[in-house]
Length: 68
Image 1 (spheres, rainbow, N blue to C red):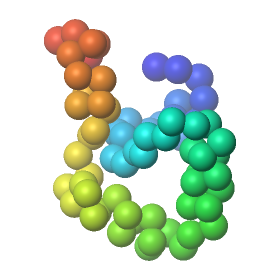
Image 2 (image 1 turned 180 degrees about the vertical axis):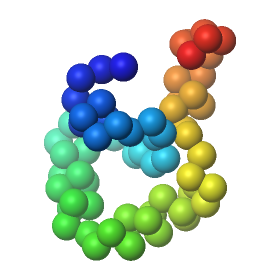
Image 3 (image 1 turned 180 degrees about the horizontal axis):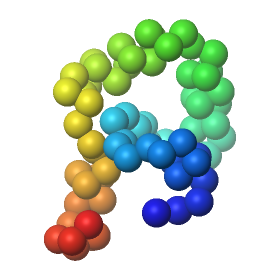
Image 4 (image 1 turned 60 degrees about the horizontal axis):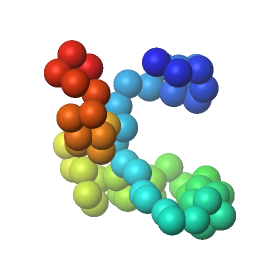
């Protein structure tokens, strides 16, 4: 849909996200997570989304319309 990481790597599902009020806090969190082993990241996802469901539609609600 948009040029960037998701398109480059063919990603189709949003399985985990965190919200932050400050961009600096989000960047710091991203940098710390990048250092984690892969299994820790998998555990983080499976803690709240054990089926690896796509969270994107719920994140945006009905703002995309029925055809998305």
